[in-house]
Length: 122
Image (cartoon, rainbow, N blue to C red; front, side, top):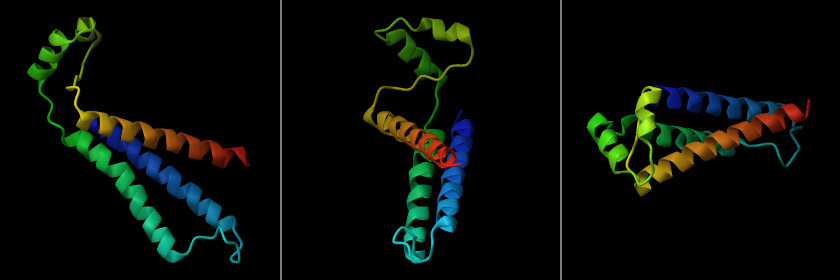
């Protein structure tokens, strides 16, 4: 699962980078929307941090099958059917996990939005 999240993050950052590069090529050099070298470096740094910190945290988060089973049994919802559907991964309900998942969700949403904006102008 961690590898899948990492691959999605890499695809997302490459899509955003290509979109920004395409946008910059079409801008005239006198435009105020043309990014300067310092801004480009800062933007790439922010993109890398925004994409790779949550995915790395998700990958290195320790997975314990016994802990997942305990969480399924103690859940206030009836989620025992998860075991029958195949491989499962249940994590504790902590603020740390919420931050990681919201970051991943936001990055994915921004990626889809940026791709839609790029191709809507064709």
